Length: 287
Image (cartoon, rainbow, N blue to C red; front, top):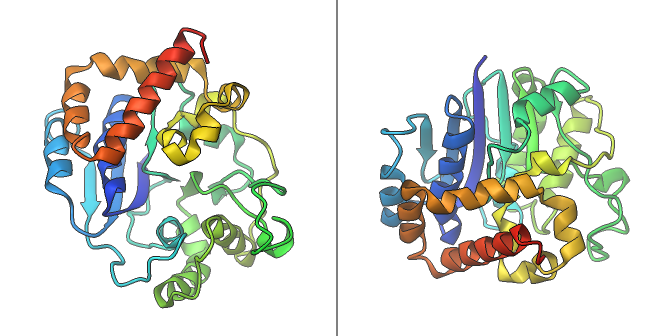
């Protein structure tokens, strides 16, 4: 059984997530192939951080630089590219996600979870919310033509690539011309349209269990302060066992060195500092 985890990211500070992302995968899924499509050149700091463990501890990483660099960079171009690229090897199972996820050992195995809950032969996904976030300038509600399938937790099975080929080519062309991707959730709307236009069933609106969500470092950006300072909201989406496993990374000498290097980027340093600070407070039951 071949398994892949795949993501696409920009070449700005977001690429500083790559070493953290791959490090966490190496601890949880050491036999999985990881493909990162990078929309630009790999930064030397990021390369240095990856050298700390890739090869010695983890040899299954492929980074494809200069991916879609000639595409316009609209709000959802990068996230949308995850679902149209045909360059990823056709594994039996390909998990498509965000580069700012930290996988934890204590969370439920994502491959097993998707397999146990799959409802068709081609993919597993979860329906996006119908009501939030409110985007009146885009659509009156996230329904009908604007239905969404969550972009950060999507499993493509081997038949997905052939079944959706024509639709993926169609949206790839739209993205290349800058005719699609101008609002934040456009990637999730596009994914739903690919599914429907390919004659596949849409997922039911069922929330993901906390234990399979892992730790989403994107929740700790300063622009998300309303989220990570909300005790009830964070307890609903972040499992305490995931918190505990994330904090264990602080004492791993390899991760300590990775953190030092990626913290040369001020935004990445701030995000990791906030994430560890929040998780320590959560562990002490202060959040």
